[in-house]
Each structure stands twice: as structure tokens, then as C-alpha cells.
Amino acid sequence: MSLEPGLVLVTGANGAGKTNLLESLHVGTQGFSPRSRSDTQLIRQGTQAARIELTGSRGPTPVVVGVNLSASAPRRATLAGATLRSAEQLRSELATLVFTPDRLVIVKGGPAARRAYIDRSLARLYPARAHIAIDYATAVGQRNAALRRVALGLSDRDVLAPWTAQVADLGATLTASRRDVIELLQPGFAERAAELGVERASLGYDAELLTIATLEARVDRDIERGTTGAGPHLDEIAVSSGDRDLRTFGSQGEQRLAVLALLLSEAELITARRRVPPLLLLDDALSELDERRRRILSERIGAVGQTIVTATGAESLPLAPAQLLRVTPGRVETD
Ligand SMILES: Nc1ncnc2c1ncn2[C@@H]1O[C@H](COP(=O)(O)OP(=O)(O)OP(=O)(O)O)[C@@H](O)[C@H]1O
Ligand SMILES: [Mg+2]
Image (cartoon, rainbow, N blue to C red; front, side, top):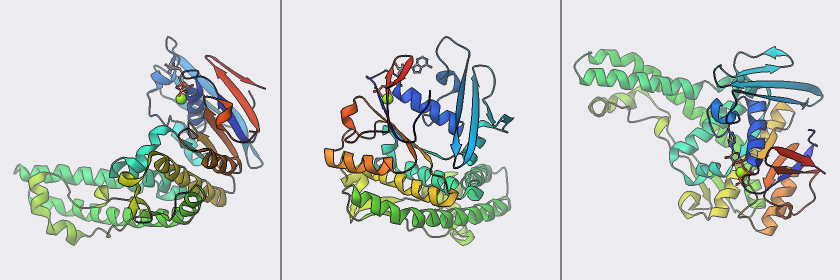
């Protein structure tokens, strides 16, 4: 099946398979599912294996990807016929941004969801810094284990020093990197959000850089609790409209628009940096939005590159898509 560039609308009844189609495009371009499901859930029930094959282009360069899923073997991906080290390596080759209704947690969920989102944006916008958040989490885990050994009298306090130094170093780097990403995302976020009727939108992040002194000042409490009680694993990132925190004071529609404005801001940055727009996969993005906002959003997403958007009916999209796909169980048809 061939998908047109521009805006592709996927319609179908509830349960027809629209999300499955988007999920397969995500697995095929990124090597993993945005729903973080196991391979067995991605393979049709009752069968043992599945394969996703995609051909397309990245700017002027043709791209051919294959992803093999199996109930009994690790995922395997090929790009232009060559096997990748891991399927997730596709992420550094191809850019795909996804919206699903689950992503509303970025605005309305707890701080961990926002930290995770900003750290994923960091990995996408600064691939060379993709490891920082992972390394920091590992260092905190190791320091916590050492704190518990000290509490149990199994180790001396001296053993903490190298972990404290590492946590402070990686923590300060992570905070500085998050500041960079937020600074990059902020102007586009505010602009897209304003266009969609969310005024003076902003991302607030006022964390201090973690230091050894900060960690040492609270080491007794940390030993007592067995966890590191300061650092970017506890930071909050506020998403606001003027002085209204959208987490608690945003309407459902405003929260959705804020998530979409963030995604559009990142799409613009990726386009500028990689010189190729990302593939946008928007599942159920249009529901809950009024007619005017649906129109503005549709115009925006239609101008990015290639965008696949799902809806139960064609009337959800206030403009004519480049292509209309109809999904029924097990089938995708085009006009
Ligand atoms: N591994 C699987 N094997 C077989 N069927 C599956 C598997 N995973 C999901 N399904 C089924 O696929 C069907 C289509 O699901 P999907 O989420 O894609 O529907 P949808 O068109 O997005 O519906 P909605 O409009 O409600 O979001 C569901 O009935 C689901 O139970
Ligand atoms: Mg769905």
C-alpha cells in the first residue's frame, strides 16, 4: 500500500485497526511500539511471527526498512538490507513523532511523565546526549544501593564518595541538557499553542545544578531513607498558560492542545536540524477539539511533511486530506 506525502487521513469504526496501523508504522520506523507492548502483543494472536516492511524516502534518499517480530526470538531490523545492532537503532536514522491519547499524561500526569518526555526529546534533538538520562538513572541506582549497604552497616561511608561524585556530575549535566531542550522547544511551543488558542504557553524549569555539596549536606537523611533525595530525578517541569498551570487548571482540550503544540515545536526543530521533516503519527488527535481548532491543527500538521492522522469518520478533518484510507478489520483501502 502506498501512502501519499502530506496529510493522510485514516478512518474506520472503533476496533477496526487504525491504532494498529499507526503502531506498525511506528515499529517500522523506530523499532519499538509507543504503547510499549511486548512483541507477542504486536504479533497477530495465534501466529508466531510478523514482519513490517516499509519503503520511503528521507529527503532525496530512498529508505527501505524491514522489522521482524517473533514470539521466540529478539526483534530484528534491517535498513537498506543491512541488519542493525538493535531494532531501536532505527531511532537515530529515522525521525517519527507520535501523538496518542495516552500522551495527555505529559501535561496532566505527574512530574515523572514530563521528565521522561523532555528526556526523550533530548535524545531526539541531541542524539549525542541520549545516554545522559540513562547513565544518571544508573548512577542514582548504584548510589542508592550503596546508601542501603551503609545503613545496614555492611559498608563504610567512604564508599559513597565516588557514587556521590558521579551522581552530581551526571545530574548537573542532565539538568543543563534539559534546560537546553526546553529553551529550544519553548518558542515554537508558545507559537503553536497560541495559534491553537492556548495563550502565553510556557515550559517552566527552574532546577538548580546538582553539586557534591548538596548531596553531602543531606547524606544522613539519604542513608536513613536508602534513596538519593536531591537531583534531576525529582525535578518538576511546569506546563503553563500565562500563570495557569495546565496540569491542574487546564481543560481537557487545552491539555491536548499543549501536547500537540509541543509535538509540533519538536517537529519544526527536527526539520531544521536534520533537514528532513519527521513522520507524524497522530492517533485520535482531533477528537475533543472544536471546529476552529481542528482546522488550524489540520493546516499545521498538513504542512510538516508526511502526517498520518486517525479518526472514526472523515468529517473530523475540516479540510481535504491528500489521501483517505478506510480501515476495516484486516483491510486497508484507499480511494
Ligand atoms: N496481537 C493482536 N492480535 C489480534 N488482534 C489484536 C492484537 N492486538 C490488538 N488486536 C485487536 O485489534 C483490534 C483493532 O484495534 P485498534 O486499537 O487498532 O482499533 P482502532 O481502529 O484504533 O479503534 P478505536 O477507534 O477504538 O481507537 C482490536 O479489537 C484489538 O483487540
Ligand atoms: Mg485507536
